[in-house]
Length: 173
Image 1: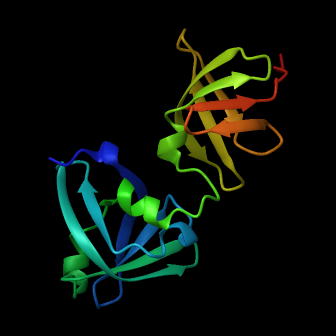
Image 2: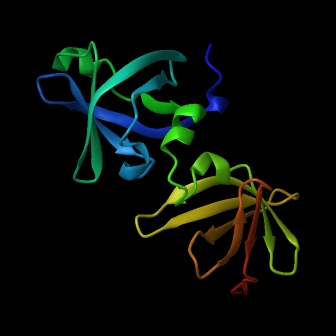
Image 3: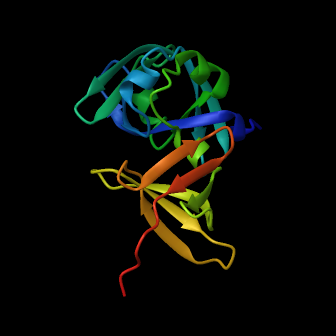
């Protein structure tokens, strides 16, 4: 069994694409961040099975990615990959890193503080709304809060220190 803690989730296969075995992928990463990927891991959450694949071709297609893999040459073979989640090993991502953003996995390990250094909780997940991402935060009491991950609310993001500082937010009552 592969330890997925050493991998970045970059997308999920939604369906086959073309008769030549390509797959259409819903992205969880930006295209420039992954366009040099040579290999990845496909994880199937329901069966807990994994399959390592070499990437032959990768291109952006509308709001999705199209992947073509070595040894997947027909639509029927691509169909077997449906719903697989694509992961890239952290060493491979470091080679590709341009230093111009954050990976969800890294943000989910951070504690959020307001500008008065009051702990608001830990990031439990990130929601994608289309306009921007929203941090889902859970405090020590189990209360959940949502904070837009946009410049207007952010003061500092320090992934190495696992700390995010946001502006004080007024709560609407």
